[in-house]
Length: 501
Ligand code: GLN
Image 1 (cartoon, rainbow, N blue to C red):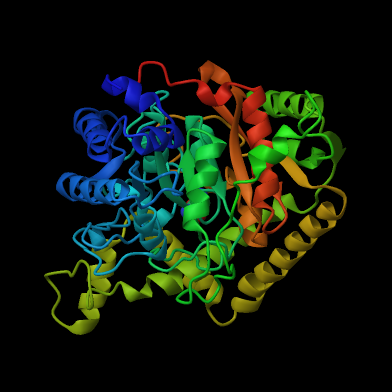
Image 2: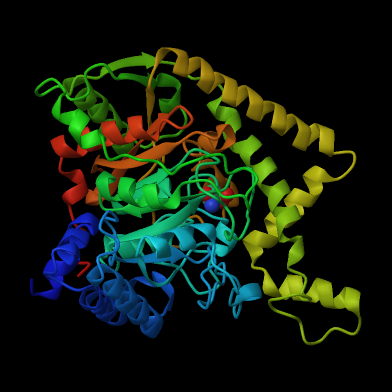
């Protein structure tokens, strides 16, 4: 194997195979990516921190384990990866893309980082995102906006935009993101990637800097569904330190390819019942996205799925309910950043109270402050019943409407985002417009359901469009079965951002 571009063209699993076959060592692969990041990250601002020495040290340690006969059934062993900067990695600065944590070095690893270390993953560094994962464009980062490799004047989506841009620009083979209301799926859609928001409770949140705890889930972002499945198998599993972590054993998707071999020829999706909710297309969706999703529905039908038009009510209430609940939880979670225990402390305060206020006012950016204020408002006495409690009831109704749909269907097909990637600066001063763009993603988090984003076409100006397959709780295998079939029959996911390299 030679040629650094060739190595960067490989999927994470293909790179893992080469390392296993001793055709390439983990330190060599790591070096290729570190060189690329040093040279090209400036164009995209995808990484906040790159930990060269530490990454090479880890790669050498993993290689020694591989040479010693360990990690034989760990397909991603030795393969470089990178982590959204809201996830704690011991010894690597973890900022949440905020001034308030600009110099925070966690003394511990997140559960998923422990799992990745055991599996032999090599973490190169930390990826840019919206501040505390609050946003949909990666423009609210204290470290500056990330740019979309498909068009560097456009946003990569968010909040895991650094993760998406890094994978799309081939600055890492796969990355880890977090999704509270769409932050894995929407940047995947904007950057032509595959990403899954797993079922709530399947991946431990221990070591994830909390935004909205009842909605947050960690998940993988990659070039295709097979890489995602391999990564999710590593991330998932039980953890006593997160009381909402409910899985006894990690996901095991290893049987899917064998099962697929037994499917009827040319109709790999035979037997899959797919809902296409008509009311999702009535709410301010762009024509190019609509066209791609409808074409995808026809293609799924051609692959054997039974696609049926239906209605899944209440989508118009998902965004208001989500923002009330997410802001309420954020206000509470972020109260810990007070300038006392860790993080930024204002230098010009004359007493303790002023120190709290100034540290928070100076340390948090505008969007985070807006959400803390909104969260405090909806939880305040007099408004609690009218807003927060009502939003919780709506959350229950949304969950019920999904339960009803899943009595007749196995998966729901929907857009990820109502538009393709838009220009940097275009929406940042209009928070309500930004919030409305989350319409297709937030309801899954409210209901705790898994959703996978898959490339399904190209819209205005050749920009990528993603579709979302939503499944029942813990039906990740069904989503991957459909995704593998989709990506065996289509080549959208193989298209590269022209001019990014
Ligand atoms: N855009 C949504 C928000 O701002 C989702 C963010 C996320 O999933 N972290 O809350």
